[in-house]
Amino acid sequence: MDCWTSSFELRKHVFDSLKELNITPSSQRGQNFLIDSKIINFQVNQADIQSKDVILEIGGGIGNLSKCLASRAKKLIIIEQDKRMANFLTSFLKDFTNVEIIQGDAVKVDLPRFNKCISNLPYQISSPITFKLLEHTFDLAVLMYQREFADRFFAKPGTKDYSRISVMINSKANCKNLKTVKPTSFYPQPKIFSSIVSITRKEEVNIENYDSFSAFVRLLFTNKKKTVRTILLNIIKRMEKRDLAVERSILDSLQFMDRRVFTMSLEELVQFHKHIKKRIGEELWLNIISPNMK
Image (cartoon, rainbow, N blue to C red; front, side):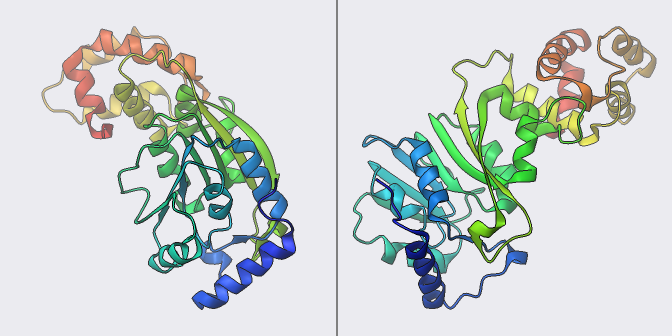
């Protein structure tokens, strides 16, 4: 059964809520509210919510999606940074006893335990919140992103969209591009298209020392168009008490040194990470990656 029976009903909720909050939304500030009931109903259906599910929603806003999630899940936890919105959600969802609202920055607060994350993410935190979600165990995420950002999940090595997040999300998860959302589905209309993406965690991640690998990928993709050799030698040159000739000789013996970072696949990066750690020694390796470790 659909949560919103019509877009008319949803638009009325949006306009009445904004009036109550005395908010004039601005696309320039990323304040765009879904007014297309078919999109929200699609998200909820894709999430396949069961009565045992504990759902995390990041950025509850005025409750367009929250209402639908709360009516189906065992528990709904909403993280909303805006205090006015958090107070509004408390009132709007007061009839639901399974809702917990956390007023705070989702990037900074500790995420609670959940098994599904269903959210229309604030686009300005898409990158940090996605990396943060990947640190947690969950069954499914159905998330809306700016299309340009979501395209990076599916980018191939050597293309302009291939980036650090392309590598890291595919190292831990399987992604599907479920739907493109037009600007006309929002009020006010943004200038961009959006994408609804599903993310499921891989059962097994065959990467030795994942934190080390993550730091290594972060390091390389800060200069993704440079060769691996150039990046590593520039770091070693800045270190004290290093014999550059010796280090250069060691690096020269490694595979992939003359490859530009953005041309390397996940599998190649995993292989390179494994071999370089063993070849250059623990001390030098830690000196190289430590600034990029969390």
